[in-house]
Image 1 (cartoon, rainbow, N blue to C red):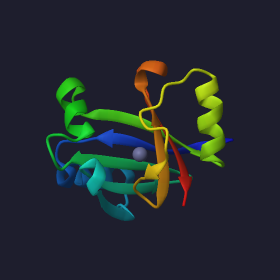
Image 2 (image 1 turned 60 degrees about the horizontal axis):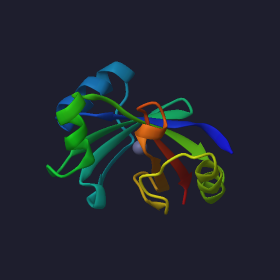
Image 3 (image 1 turned 90 degrees about the horizontal axis):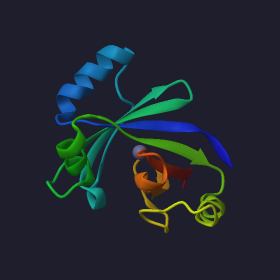
Image 4 (image 1 turned 30 degrees about the vertical axis):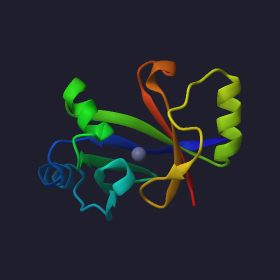
Amino acid sequence: MFEKIEHLGIAVKDLAASQKLFSALINQEPYKEESVESEHVKTVFYQTGESKIELLEATHPSSAIATFIEKKGEGIHHIAFAVSDIYAEINRLKAEGFVFINETPKQGADNKVVVFLHPKSSNGVLIELCQER
Ligand code: ZN
């Protein structure tokens, strides 16, 4: 089951500058800073009610965030939905014809396992499904 929008991921060029900006915007500091080596990203998370904002900066030119910013500029990069059973959702969505970037859940930021759906099968929007580990 899709439970809620867990977070919005925002691709940024300069995490320190964007952290300053979003801290002023949201009027609080991020509750977490984390690097995901396998994805070549550095992230910070803000809690806003039951949803979060994730800022992502590339740490390597081969990072998907670097490619995204090159193509589209900074901005909303993905929508992440919290799901109660990630394997059941993967099977359901595959049967519906959705295309996955990775079909096997992998370690994401913020103590989650995650999969991504390819934006080509969801109106150009990168969708993340995540489940608490
Ligand atoms: Zn995310």
